Image (cartoon, rainbow, N blue to C red; front, side):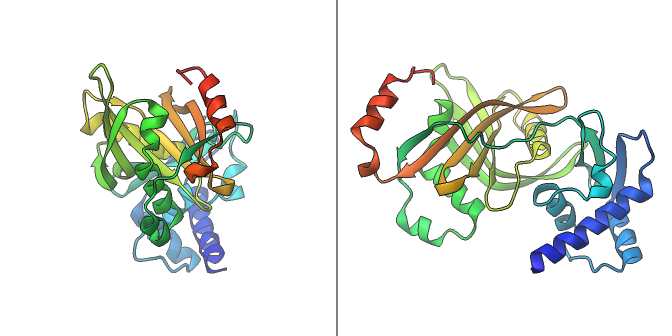
Length: 269
C-alpha cells in the first residue's frame, strides 16, 4: 500500500511538471531537478531525500500518468531521458516494448548457483544478476567468453548526466574481437527500459571506445524462467536482435529427451 501511495504521489508530480511545460506539437519537454522541488511545493508533496528516486521510479517501475499518455501520437511514446547533471526531458520517441515472448521454447541449464547465494539474495534484481553470472548465461547466449567487470556502475555520460549500469561484462571471441556487454536486469514489477538501453550504449561508446557493444536485458518470468534479450539501437529506437529463454534446474531434471532435442538444434541457434 505504501508503494502504491508513493507511485501516486510521484505520478502527480511528473504530471504537474509536464502540464506546466507542454504545448501541443512539442516532442521535447525539458525540466531540472529544481523543477521537481517547485512542483512538489505547489502540490504539497513531500519529496524523498534522493530526488533521483522520483525520476527513476516513474521511468522504470510505473506507467506515465494518463494526462501525459493522452498527448502521445504517431505511434510514439513519452520517455524521460537524462540530458546532463540534474537535467531531464520528456521526449516523444518511437520505442518498441521489450517483453518476453510467451511462445518461445525454454532451454534447461544445470543450475550452478551456490546454494548460499541463492538463499541470501536480497532482491529479485540481485538474485537475477547472480544467477546469470554464476551460470555463465551471457557466455551461453552470446557464444563468447565473458567476464563480469563491475555491477551497479555509476558514472556520468556527456549530454546525459549520471547513469547506472546494472552490470557490465567484457568478453572476447575466438577471433580475438573484444566486447563490452551492459546487462539490464529486471525482476518483480520493474519493467525493461529502452531508455536505459540507449544510455547503456552511450556509456559504452564513450568509456570503451574500440570494443563492440552488445547490450543485454534479462528478466525473470513465471517459474523462474529467465528471458534474455540482445538489443541494438536503430535510429533513436531499440530493437530486439535475439531472444532466448533459459531455466535453471538440477542436472537430474534434464532428460535424455531434452538432450536429444538440443542435439537436433542447429549449432548457430
